[in-house]
Length: 404
Image (cartoon, rainbow, N blue to C red; front, top):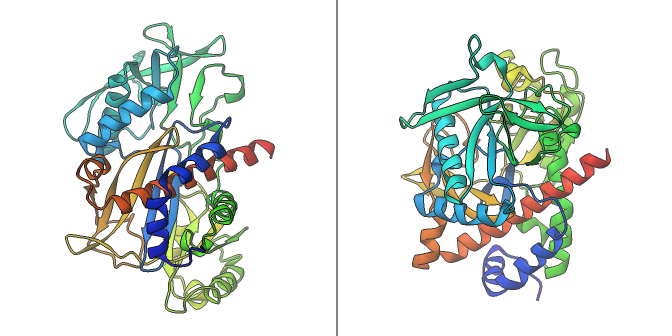
């Protein structure tokens, strides 16, 4: 039977849960699966669509306790038994105390899996004078201690302890690249530091996802439109000088011919992160009429990274609400397996806009509790499958990046 509606897709995933996961496991087999991934998913009346994939997620503080317990169990399955001393390479923006909450819960989950954990940074500017440790406090008043690291004999080393790290978890998205020859380092690490935003492109990820979905839907006779947002890419845009804006406007209008006319279009910087470099338009004229303030937001992102490549993406209007606010789901995966998630809601935006912006709040979306109570298991199952397919796409994306 062909799957052509969202309701049919829901029922199909529940009924064929084992076979679908076996298929994804087979596709991932023998490949380098990232240690973790987070996937933002929009659900409309007619489809589901992942709209972002983060290889260095920074929201473990938003997971419920049951999901954090599931995270620890999956970490135990993901990090091999020979790797006892685990380092977490953190961001340099340590003034963000919510980020430090994330680091606390991530490190605690790894510790509860039976590993020793140490927080690391290669950024000498974080440490004053001759110090090699930095003591901080997170938003929730948790103590955070970060150690200065270096590379000794091609292995990541904790300077203060003069100890090598067995496994390095990267939690730094490298929108500002770290000056290291990663290819020379023999310490096991994941996700690959070569997928930082200094190199990675959203466009490439969604091209990989499109191919993954094409194969998946062919295998199970599913309409591909049920599982993705249509998109296009535009290169060599300079928002400060307006070079390339006409081409961008034309591509927006071209995409509009492929989707419902009342839908909006998301313009996203291909290297954007933290919800930066995003603008929502109705048509190409909106692009041509961007004022300087809006163009500046699309021009420069985190760590002053210059945006020149652009993803234009079908706006998927969310039907999810939390406390009368439009919301979207974010799924967290460890080793390619779903462990939990949360809802991002925003009272200052409507259901067709970017929710990862000023005004957003987080609601714990306890997948483990859903599993225990069997409440709305269908949605958990669908979100989990989409998260896994997006993770598979990130694997394909990485392989293609390695091949150049």
